[in-house]
Image (cartoon, rainbow, N blue to C red):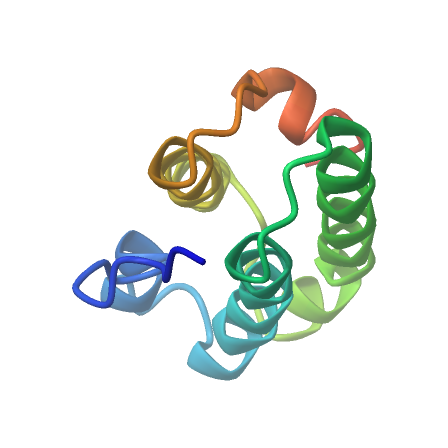
Length: 108
């Protein structure tokens, strides 16, 4: 089973930008790591992978209020950072899911 690229920094742009509270970026990172774990365990079924992506996207949606409570929001930089990270993961594991489909449940 293939392991994820240990040199890739998940959500690097969000961590580098002081506008986003690190503890909230960590919550998103943990969600994304759950998808990586599924892929590292060898999952190749597109429907199962998409279901995992839908779950984490809905969970990220649920964090929006917490971002607002901390004078932040899931805006352009965050959207791009999340999308770039997920796209990199999908490419790393050769998963043929378009990024727009991967985050289709987003409302950010």
